[in-house]
Length: 89
Image 1 (tube, rainbow, N blue to C red):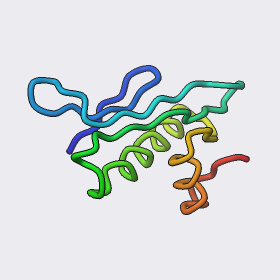
Image 2 (image 1 turned 180 degrees about the vertical axis):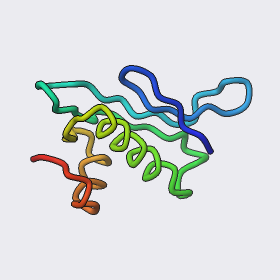
Image 3 (image 1 turned 120 degrees about the horizontal axis):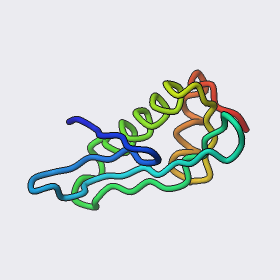
Image 4 (image 1 turned 45 degrees about the vertical axis):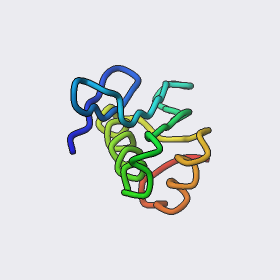
């Protein structure tokens, strides 16, 4: 499973380019990025894809030198379970 990254999205494509999972993030203040939306197709839920998606998004934000915050409820809960990821309140 290989996630792809573009300017404000981390996503997973399936066969024929079908979007399987997606996380949207944006810079809300200098150096602060908000993960505001995540989605995984229902048929893929329960396989840990959402967790890997958020982890990849956090990794991408850190690669850009940013701090992470989340308004998406899933991403916010994920950050609370992974405090070592250097998020901000």
